[in-house]
Image (cartoon, rainbow, N blue to C red; front, side):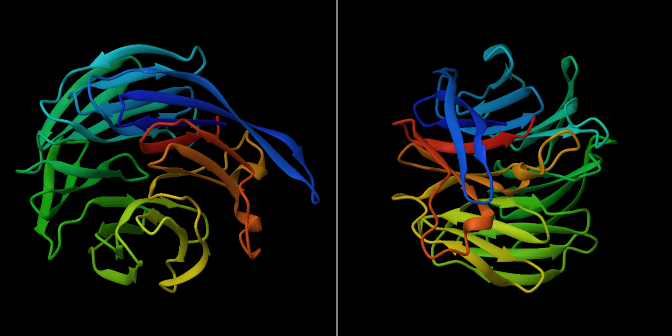
Length: 316
């Protein structure tokens, strides 16, 4: 398992997550730094992984591509004219270790589509007037949702390469994620809304204590949220209520969350691991089966001593 984090200080961080012991009585992980170097000419805004490949987007308007096996940077993409705010890989469900496309969004208001093997720019699509805040890729890989600084939600047809739908929101959303083919989530300040993917109608509204800065979708309708309250909250999106919470998960605001998705070749243990990163540079890995305890402790942690801005993980 691999974790990749970006920082305000322009550094990209890579960590290897390995099981040391795993039994009913004892579970221990090792979180080992495998690479760290200055990658961008400005703060790193977004990161994404797919199998052995990772990508980062920076305030320097560029996308960097990395080979996780060799821990090296293998290329740069300069197709945006604004800070790259969101990245997503599309992988075929039958071959999750082989990314087929990379989708990016930036403050120039555009979404770019790239072929992932090799990395080739295919299309630039104008979507928002005032910059794209976030992007969510549909599980089919055929469309994406974006939210922008113009307080709009847009749908992008990735097959035809054009924006197919746009609507104005009552509040500017900063995060959008698909939970499944039937549901997606949007974040606006401290409010998280769950929507039906067919008609975008609100199914549930969930309110956190303070502003939400990151979310991650888990199994069985669980949505994890972190932010300025320093907690990691697990929401049951089927009922719209809190399932459980890691109080005081970090000493400062939570900036990134990553779930290790279950894979055909991976261990079933991996799907119970949640990683979180905070703005004080600390990354922690949690066992979701231990959250019911009064004071859950992380299985592993590492301090990068930098201001982390984003986090992603890969089970492969």
